[in-house]
Image (cartoon, rainbow, N blue to C red; front, side, top):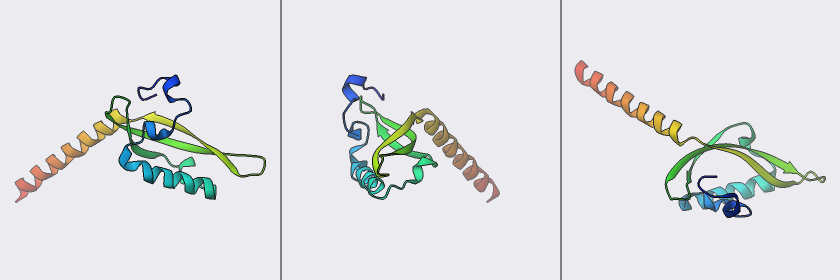
Length: 110
């Protein structure tokens, strides 16, 4: 996943793919979810930056599910993650193009 083999990733922290600047924020959110048993990302898609093994930036999207034990306490979180880098880049290019066209329209109206 994201350039890592199963052997390289299995049992390792998600810090493998979390950009260093976002790790504190990620782990704070993780601890809060584990403490409260509540997350909005079971239904809402979360889109965040990630890092490929080779160091390049990725854009990923994911949802999570909370796994409870017999005592109803949260035991683990699982996530469905997908690489949306291409989609994100395409949308960014479209936003730039729209801004350029809007600027041209504004200039022609002036």
